[in-house]
Image (cartoon, rainbow, N blue to C red; front, side, top):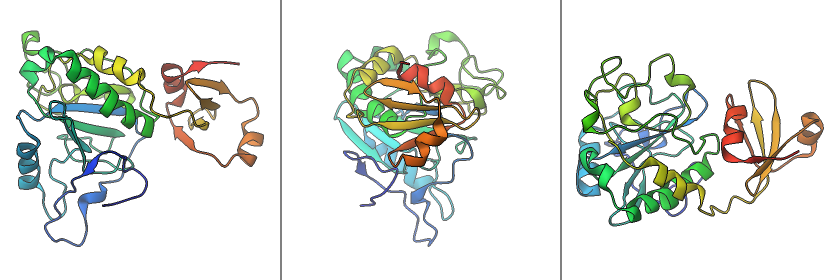
Length: 266
C-alpha cells in the first residue's frame, strides 16, 4: 500500500502494472495545468475484473496504458484507486495531463440514463464527494450536458462529435464532464447519466471538510479563507499568509471555483 499525498482513504489501491520496469507508472505523469476537471467514463462491462484486464493489457514499460485514477462499481459498491490525484492518469486519447482527474464507472453508456437513484446517490456520496474534497479546485458543477445515443453522432472527435467541447474551450472548462466531451476522443461514454442527481448527492454529503483552508487564485492573486461551506475574501493576504500554516489550495481559476463551492461572506 502506498501512502502519502494524493491517495484517498477508503479506496482500495490497485496499482498500475509496470511490467518490472524500474520507472513505475504507478505515480502517474505530471499535470501540466491546474487540476480543474473531473472526467467520467463507463467501462462498457459488468465487473471491475474486465476493466482491470483491459488496463493491464495496454500497460507498458513506459506507460500506464489506459488506467484512470479510479475505477468504481456502484452495484457492488467497490472503489479502487490506481494513480494519485496529485498526478495525471492515462485514460484519454490526448490531454491526460491537462489538469484532469478520471473515473471509470462499471457499466454501459447506453444504459446510464436508466441507473436507479441508489446508484447515482452512491456515485455522488461515496465517489465524487471525497474526490472533490481532496481536489477542491474542481467545482461541483456540470458545465455541459451529458448526451445519450438519441442525440446523434457522438462517437467522433471534434468537430463532428455532437457532445465535444472545442479544443479552444477545453482548457478553460472546469467541473465534471464526460469522456464524450474530450475534443480528440471518439468515445461517447458515459452517456446521458443523471449528472444532476450525482452532483446533488455529492454536495449534500458531509465530507468532513470543516477544516479551515486558504484558497488562492494564482492568476489574480486573490485569497480566501474557507471552512464549513463558507468563504471570505482576505483584504490583506500577505499578512495572513505570513502566519498561516494550515492547508492551502491554489488554482489559476480559483476565482471561478470559490463561488461554485462556497457561500461567500464578508
